[in-house]
Image (cartoon, rainbow, N blue to C red; front, side, top):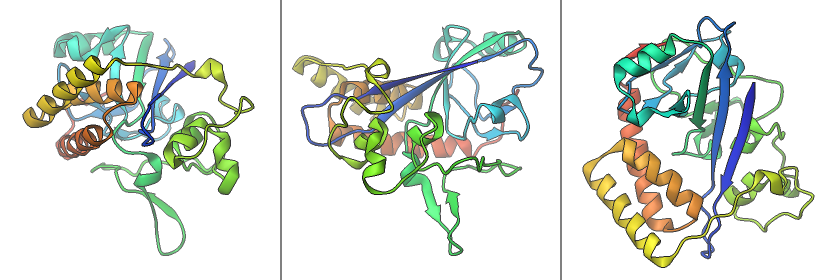
Length: 250
């Protein structure tokens, strides 16, 4: 079973920050091996490095760079390594993943000379990750809301694509309705405090704090320049993490 929740930034600025997408998934008692490996364990950030073909994780379309933020209703950043490992041996497992918050799918995809597309952020995996060909994926919305990628005005039917492309807000006929949208507002004082926290996390190279603050800042739709700098630093730290060896294979 899976449930998709999406938060869109509400901003007084003309500059958009994209979307934060959180996927809630459950692995039942019938799932023997979930099928993903990670380069670090709690209390360090839990970032997917590799998804094994034919497994539960592959069926759920988890991807390299997705971040596990909750396991069985506990925040992974507050779990010990032993608690995390013990929980992973139980069933059912309730996961909450942030769909790679550091880079948009559009920025990641590269077109090869033969016209095919390849991802630029799959990390150093021993096996190639399978790609579903049921429909083309050009955005996070295309991945998880099953909206085929299109050209021109067809893309504007998606709220995700509106924020990624910087176009006008679609009408209420959007396939992603108001039931999928949450608006956030923030006072000026909160903006300043969050900005200071972001700057501190960048300077201390604290990936776990950066991931949390990026989610909060994007949800509130503020500080475009600081958010871009935080994303860049978090992306750099995440890439360094993914280059290491696997600490957990589940």
